[in-house]
Image (tube, one colour):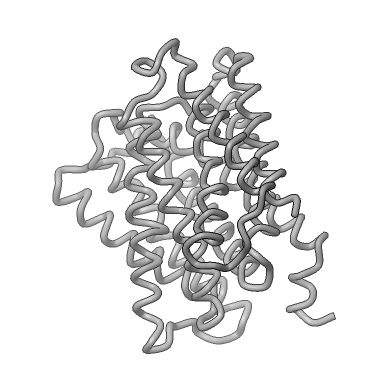
Length: 305
């Protein structure tokens, strides 16, 4: 079986996609813990951006090193691929994680993980309506409605719209999800012209440098209060380098919907791991559980075709 056929095998896609979602799910509590270890306050947006930039710069370097080692050649974008690298960097790293990091500081890890699940719906809608990569069906529309209801439900968990939904919290997480969806559709197209690992690695390096410069010169600073902060930032870099590289490869050889169907495990892993590591068990109320079920069911229905 060739590598191409192997990456189209449903069992292989399942295992690799679940691995990616498990890694992404662990990012929610990791970021919260990182804020504590590096003494980053919820209101200190620039230090959050600096923290994110350091993570993604390391992620890009790791992706290129690992990819070059596995392919036994130095990975470097072709001359006409730099435009794709820069475009991906804007949506997949700079915009997505600016809003994600700042938003996560003003929302619970459990709530953020559920809202972030909307990225799957946005990716499918973009693939169907904008890029014409797939057909928009009744199942996909129904699934999007289910997911939207789930997001609204969890956003109102605070008792009313004012308490349960903050623009700089849940609102920013939604914007990050849209940016991620755009990057997913773009990497599906770009990977036909360039190695997806090369695209992921260099866009992370560029995005990381931009975020480091913006965060530092705008006043952001990092202070390590514990030696455990170093292995944590390395682990978070590995999350990005491994998960995005694998996800890009899967999108290259499979339809967007057949890969994103596994995105339903992302909010589930995020909620469970946040509850475990951040002691947020008390926040998992009936409303959250219903929202998780709706989001998961919506993603399944969208891709049932």
